Image (tube, rainbow, N blue to C red; front, side):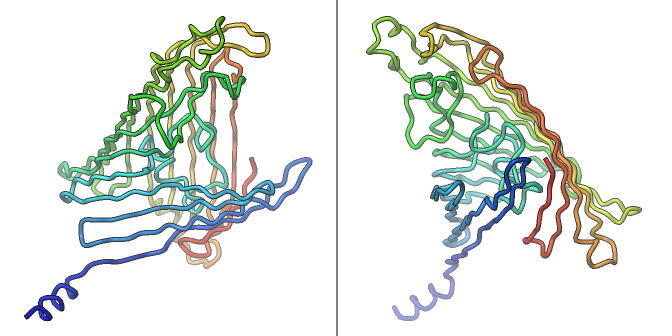
Length: 347
């Protein structure tokens, strides 16, 4: 009887393991230098236990500028409570906008770089450790997706280690520097039955300062403290995919607008030991268009894709990292398969 029960349980076992991921290799040609670069391999491990439990993780292995780096992109466990409700714990990709969570992999991103202000050195959170609740609702022919999360949150750079970056937020921290946690949410609305259009709004709130002053050992500046500094980030994103029958093409439009508001604080310039302050607001946005004549009969042209992107990144005036940048990038992609692409772009 026992052997029969064990055999029955084995038949119902739904444990699955999958190894996926992506790799890239590139060439950068500037006016004064030409380099093979961007050599990276990102294996993604997926393990499913039954119908409700899923574990996923991504390792980021990269070799650039004669240096090898190994990072953990994300590692989390998900439990499906109902069809429209999932709980996730661990290191998660932050659902702030769509680029960081959905479009950052090199074979998904239509360009070889991220838009200005987005990425590991940008103004937005990419990944953090915490808990997330997400799901979706059917609203007639429309759909609504949602995500709520609580994570360790960012730290504010006080200028003691990187003087020219005082007032910036540092997002990817293994541990928190205070008792506060960052909380955020994203809501996405898909009005059409075919889900061709999605409009999203995101918000993120944190208190990034440490309770202790970073200048406690300095009797002249130990009154400087950032424990009450607050950070409020908002984003609006759009995704639209449409078949243009007369052109036998598919157009793909993406865009995201980001705003970062950090409360005023006083910083110390170590170069002249003078105090200064500024309105700590940053903005960035990008819009991009991809056109692929996928419905043509020509076996070569149907795999070509024209892409263009415009992005802007403005950092606070009066800060030591103040800048106003804009970037135009155009390119031609060739898809050998649905997951293998050669990108050629001019920036």
